[in-house]
Image (cartoon, rainbow, N blue to C red; front, side, top):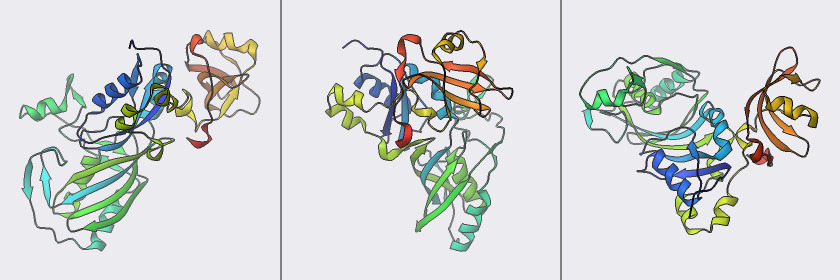
Length: 307
């Protein structure tokens, strides 16, 4: 089957032991799609929600890349590893004598945010090379701490040295680094032993499908799982423009915004719920196009209320 132009968003439940790119390629092949991209890497060890954008939807993947993510995480106290997670080699083991009140106190200290040092084994680059290449070669590349936001870090229980957490965090947060930092503050060391993504922006894991389900289904069923191209923008206000304004918007011209539309990013539609793209209303009341779907790919917007 030759790849076709397929537009929309697939919510995939990524399995363990597979890279995000491998999962993307498998989904792309199963849907017979020509163009696709994922919206935020999950390490091979991690599982859970991996939104995949197809066709015109790839133009709006940045919204999901920037969105908050929610995870269920397991942190193993007392053991540090080379990578900060269970895939690395053990560096050291320490006895764990941490009372629950102290654990809760340390977890609370991260809520709100902190300056996080990214892991040495990460895709961040130094002089054009990923940090993990330096780490694998036994070299130490400089790492710069970045402010990350953690609005939620809930203690979900503990079984021996394994602590279960639920957390919501900003773009750029490394849960592996958080696990290591928790261990450092507790004085016993720690690493991330399991991770499952529960949500990404407006999307939820409960709406995702597995590669196994896709493989066993018909092409019609697979493509019926695709959400509309405008689905990642569901949290933004919408703006409907008049037919005579469509060409001006498509040519990149500013047009007068609907009276009362607040300044900021908006979803743009033509009459009949035909999705045009992403725009921004300026403070002085003009609509400026930012990312538009191709004219031949104009689609009717989906029901975003359940996204």
